[in-house]
Image 1: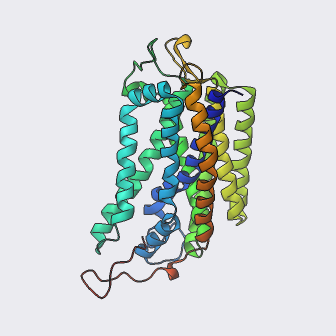
Image 2: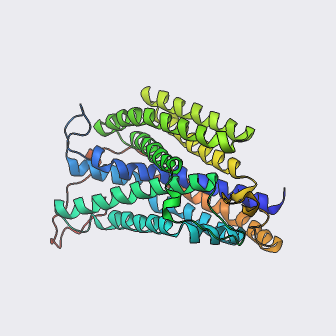
Image 3: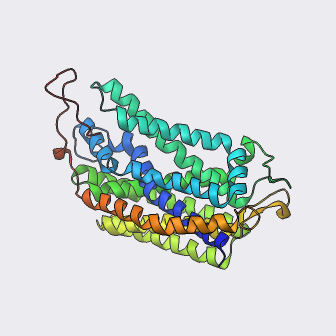
Length: 357
C-alpha cells in the first residue's frame, strides 16, 4: 500500500470518528426542543422543562468540544495530504462549508452563554441557536458528502464549475435528510444511555420512531448511490450498516441502550466506509469528464510530506485517543433532573453562576 492510499484510509477513519462522536452531539441539539419540554413526549411524566434541558446539555457538556477536534484534524489532514482535493472542495463548496462553520459557531456560543444570565427569554434564544446550529451542519454534511460521491462538475484545471444549486439535487438532499434522521436516532439513544427516569424513556421512544424513518431513508439513499457507484466492498458495508441499524432498534426496544448505541455507531461508521469505498480511487469525481476527476494520485502531496505526516500521526494519535477515552470514562454516569441544582439568582454576589448547561 502506498502512502497516498494510506492517507485516504486515514481520512476515512477521521471522518468516521467525527460523525460517530459529533453525530450524537447534533442529535441531542436537534432534540433539545422536544425532549426539553415540560411534559416530554406524549405520555411522559411531567417535569421541570429547564432542568430537562440542562440534563440534555450536560450529557454532551464534557465532550462536545473534544468531538469537534475530529473535523479540524480531518480538514488539516486533507490540506496536508491532498492539497488539490482541499483546494477544489473548499472553493466549490465554499457557501455550504461557510454555513456549516457559522452554524457550529452559533451552537458553541449557545453552549457557552445560555447559563451566563437568568431569564427564560435569554435561554430560549440560545436554545434556538443550539437547535439550528445542530440541524444545519447535520443536513449540509449529508448534502456535501453525497455530492462528492456522485460527482460534481470539475474541469481539466481541477476547478469546480457549478454553483450552489448544482449541489441541491434530489439525491444530495436525500443524503442530507438521511444524515439528520440518523444523527437524531443516534442522539436519542445516547441520551437514553446517559440518563434515567422520564427523559430516558422519552429518548427510547423517540429513537424507536426516528429509527424507522432512518431505515427507510438510508435504504433508499444507499441503493441509489450503490446502483451507480457501488462495488462489492461498498455493498458489503451497506449490508452491515443496515443490519447494525436494525439491531440497534431492537436493542433499544429491549432497554439495552449500550448495545443500541454501539449499533448506531457501527451504522454511521459503515455508512462513511460505504461512501469512501464508492469514491476510491477517486477523491472527487468529475461529472463533466471522468478523466478530469481528482484521484489519490493526482491530488496528493509529495512522498516526503506524506512520510512526515505518517510519523507525526503514529506518535500523537494514540495519545489523543487515550485522552478522549479517559474523558468519556470519567463522565460515564447517568444523569437525572435530581442531579441538576436550582438556578442561581443573577446579580447575587454570594451565588456565582454555575456552568451546568
